[in-house]
Length: 514
Ligand code: XMP
Image (cartoon, rainbow, N blue to C red):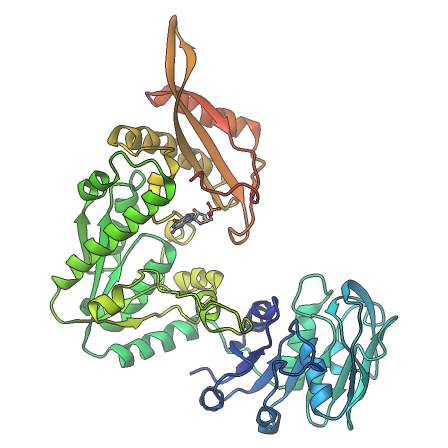
């Protein structure tokens, strides 16, 4: 259990996850729950402070997402943001008016009444803030002071220092608001008096203790892919239950060169993990024979994986749990408030397996964001080459070979890709980009080598910068590095006589070619 805990009630803003990020970056544990969460869960969570998120609705509309007054009666400090501010004003007897114009974008804000939220903020008399609202507060509830204004809004912030309830019309959680993180920290530390106790060291300790309690003497089966999420999940589980963790590594024949040895072999050896290697390459490649359609390839690989995993897991006697590296954004995705028409997405990575195998899920990372997983990996003593591995898709090299996947094509791509990886590492670019890899285009073009004419395949280099893979841009690598990759691939990889560079961004292109 974390003693300093912030509950973020989600009213549907696209920025709610960012609030949680900022709070955790400040060293305070936070969780997002929908505004209509079961009050029993809130009681069990025992929040030390409450943050009300923004949202697209109007508090003046019938049926709008409502704040349950019992949360204000808990007596914990409250920060309302945007819709959260309007909700507080509305509920506590202030006046909210609607407007036909939405104010969207940067605004200049001036703090008032020595509001503690703006302690240490540079230019608090002329602060650049980010606004996104229609309604606004026109009359303050009793006991509240105006805490700031802009040229268009009289009450850009309000506060009741006695009750420790504050509210901001703008969004401190977005990067466009200057000193926004400091404003949130002032709420956490100066208003709510919290301590920054959320650290990866404390997470690792409590997580291991919780896993011991949850799993007891039972056996857990987990699919290791070599990616950072399943690796960290495995190491945490191993610390908690030792040899009762059974990891299964499926070689689907679509892996890069050295994949198995670099990660899984390393884990088995240095972390003493119980890993079963399953060579299913022939089965996968057989099912993929003659298949050219990218979606068909994905489906075939997904089904085969479940089949192989199910078979191997059943061979281990007494398994009661399935371990998964589910992350917090997936959990929010399936629990958050997204409006009445929202479809709830299942976050199970291995869709259908737990029900099919009658297993309970154990998800040690379900509280963590991606960068926190990397910090946990450091804490657990995993080496840098594992922590900083670039993401690699589940369907592996199959979606980097355009058209049919064959042994021969896999061999060519593996060699070319190895050169790309080596050169990225040697030039110190590997960690600066999101992903960098080779794609095999099995179309023939003419070349010349020595005195001979060649007629061979093309390799495309796909190297991109990205923050979250939702958008990406091609990396501006030095031309000498690109030249080295190209020369080496053409000289060292038989079957390739041309290298091209992909200079498309996402959108409209995607990162992978299929
Ligand atoms: P795209 O190609 O959609 O890729 O721009 C975004 C990110 O997701 C990875 N990716 C996948 N990962 N199974 C996975 O596990 C898949 O089918 C898959 N397709 C793409 C891709 O490598 C990139 O990081």
